[in-house]
Length: 108
Image 1 (cartoon, rainbow, N blue to C red):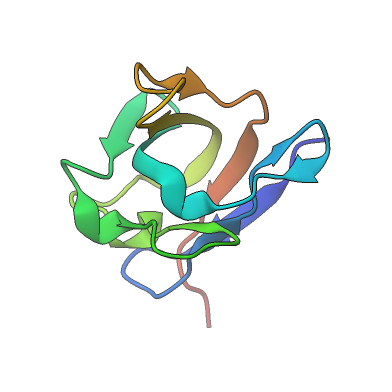
Image 2 (cartoon, rainbow, N blue to C red):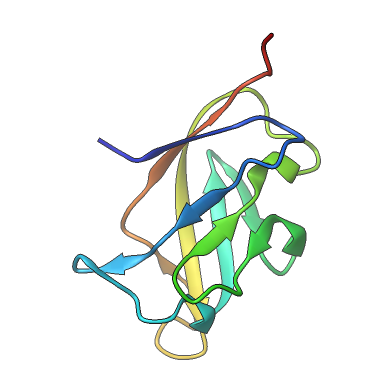
């Protein structure tokens, strides 16, 4: 079963992920120089859309898809990360663990 995250467009919901390699957290997430995320077939990346990403934390990455403009449509999406660094991942590495993003409308 894939991890799931729920967001509401325009709200402060974020995705915080600790990336692991063979079950061990990578030592410093700040080594990531660029991060891309496929949300379904849409691609967002930290250089084109820097406000959607926070790559300044040592222990995790943070993605803010609720702030995407135009907004991501309501629904459920399988997401895949593309990770870049200055070393062996300089060309981009499709992270092997996907997750599910649920985009829901607010309800009263």
